[in-house]
Length: 236
Image (tube, rainbow, N blue to C red; front, side, top):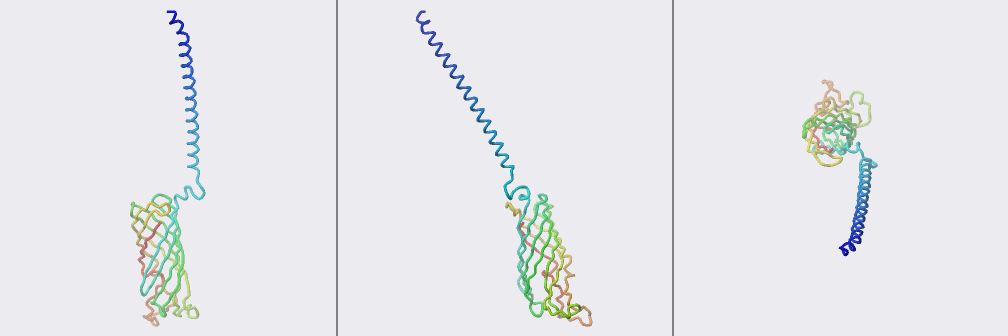
């Protein structure tokens, strides 16, 4: 019994010291974990703010911006090379409005003599996908064109062989959309349009009096398009 008492107190003190050390270490670890979580929370909040903060040139408007255009080529007695860059804004997921510029090189053997010229203009458009891959397209195109001066009417005293004038073309049509995954280009659009003003784009320098009308001047239309039906393939 004396031996047990002799060894009891040192053992008790050792056990008490061990428990105290473990408790202290545990508290230290607890505060370390809590402090670490607190710092991690602050870091995550700062990261979230960094994500929400738009970088220069980005933001909600950049997500709605669409860039692209169309290219056209027609060869033969009437050659038409068409380049039309476009930019639009997606007002909704299915509705885009925008503007475009157009440049055309035109060579026509319909006129006498054969003409080579450059047409230019602009257009405003709206496109609505009423089905995921089917869209309606409306636009108004304004084009500066040249025409052969036959020398009648107010053009009879004009020395220029190819005067210029502005013509307007309201168009409406339907088309097919192939979606893309691009940031600024969201689809390829094949569209068939009808030009409601095509038959009004007649050459103003021809005398249409039937007593003097020359059948050889039957090519009266000065539109850069060969018919009121216009087919376009556009990326936007």
